[in-house]
Every structure is written in structure tokens, then in C-alpha cells.
Length: 160
Image (cartoon, rainbow, N blue to C red):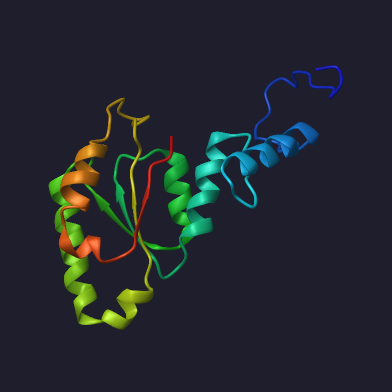
């Protein structure tokens, strides 16, 4: 604490990113541990998801998202400028309907579908509701069970 002069500043209205050598050492250690070229450590949960979504998803991409996600995810969705389809909270049947509609749309224009990235975003433990997403059911029964999802690259994002 004294080495880095870390003291309480009271209430700060926005998170202030402060990077010191221990942060950089942690990132290097994580990169080595995961056998990656680089790693990044965020100091605040809101900034993590609000910046990760737009970092991966761009304007022409499509996102299917649970309508019960938290504010940080909603801001990340807005920042991505992707086309967002919300499915009813924890309703896997509604998600499957939306995915089927997307599959029909993709068949009309396969060239565009091939270059359009698609994401499914849900929380694991919903901060607004306190309930848990049916992740095993999402992955096993609904997502992996659909033949059209097996052949395409879908990204599944669950921020926790």
C-alpha cells in the first residue's frame, strides 16, 4: 500500500484506470499461463463487459441477447452498433424461434450470412432477477442440437 501510495479516495463518480507494474506483471503472468501472446486485466466489472462486447461485435454483426441482462451489457450492446434481437428472459423456446428465423434469413443470402458474425449473450447469474440462466440447456439442447448452428461459427458470451 505504501509502495504504490494506494489510499482511499472516497467516492469517485467514475472508475479511474490506474496501471502500475503489478498490473502489467499480472497480465504477463496470465498470458504465459494461458499460452497466449497477451492478456488484459480490467479493474472494474462494468468497463469489462461494456468494452468487450463492442471489441468483438461490430456494426454488421447480429446479437441474440436475453432481455434481462444488466445495464453494463446493455451499454456494450449499444456501443457495438450490432443488430440486436432480444429473447424473453430465460426463454429457450423463444431463443430457438429467433435462431430459426435467422437461419431462414441466412438461407436467402448465404454470401452475407457467411461473413456476418453471430453472438448469443446471456448472464450466468442475472443481477436484476437473482436467477440463473439455463446455460447447460442453452448449450446442449438448444444450441448444439440445432443442425444449422453446428455448421456455423457462433460466439457464446456469458459475462461473470
